[in-house]
Length: 306
Length: 274
Image (cartoon, rainbow over all chains, first blue to last red):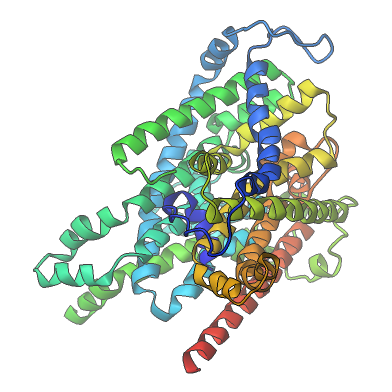
């Protein structure tokens, strides 16, 4: 189980210093590079090179097409067009991702705390519960929210009865359902890093705070929360980044007014084949996320993120 | 009343935690229910508004919903197996280099491994397509595998690295002191100890590959994987068999994890008694 956790907590766990070279071996200098080579070659060719390719594509002459071919004309105007046409979807994506991340933190913290501190012998079972959604298809689980939030099923029906809501009350195909879907889909990415950092918390510190007459709230604010900050930071990043680029929830659970930037990129690339503008959109998305992440990391003040 | 208050004060964190777990479990439970439901037509596959019409048809005729449902499933399994094999080998090699060796560029390598996990899928998918388009490479089965290996490597590295970092280096030293050759040490001491990490990494990478939609859709050409089938069918009406397949996936994975947990618990108990 710990390996699965380490994966999701990836960015949150500080690297341990490498052990001293194994006794008796005069290490061959080239060996680590040989071990790295095949994997890094793959990443270089299919992760780094595509980024360069995306960047040049974003500067192609926008009047080109697949038939006439594209020309690199350093058309920075594509970026202007991207922002001009789709700033609404950009802001909406960042806003939805922000709300979903906050919701994940509010829901995920008590769960992670319950597992790490109060879990006892149920710890492993509860952890399996956290990763269990991954056992089946992401798309099918998202579609299941259509069932749950449907206008005539027990959830909405019950809400209508309890709060005497009118017939125009809907949850499905609204902003609510899109954000709820994002929250649901990325919650495990919040819980696992939080759990990883709360698990390391020494219970004696909490006892000490208690012995010194700190109220539970004060103990939480001054002991637990600061010590779990690396988990909070990596959890929010693991949630915010994929949520801002997601378009599956907006497509399956939303309406045309909840379109996110991912929807635009996807249709520009795959339906309209307008590669230059789509590439510019992708790049702006990445830049936007990067800027927000940098500001956040600096304010949160942890160096342990990477 | 006061006792209720004290009870709540004591257990409210657990209660909230369990409620959140229930929220996380709800869609899976609904998919299990839907797999036993006979919808009126394909546009109501994901609706239970007028209760469940119990049936076993979705399970007994699991390939019957569409001519392409089971071929798509088999494509996904093939892609998953091939990508997992490649990504696990490449990622494990990197993990060994990063944990076992000190070398120039180690810090930069760690950052590089983290980058694909921190990049939105849509950016990775679209950039790969931009590369394939400008290089004139036709997209299809091969390009899907290329893309899947790319995003699985980092997860393999992190998983195997966690296992390696937790290992006691003195075990290898002991083997060397007993005149084991480096190769024998690796095969008989290191590898068996790292194996659980490698297996976990392989399982993780298979499930990531099997479930990927966003990156795949950019690089699939005419090839249809299971997630692409679900997405495409969603526009026309989804065959109810999709829910049976998703439920079967869940149950199979659950059994795997349960066996692993039981074995771990048994081993821990044996270690405690001996």
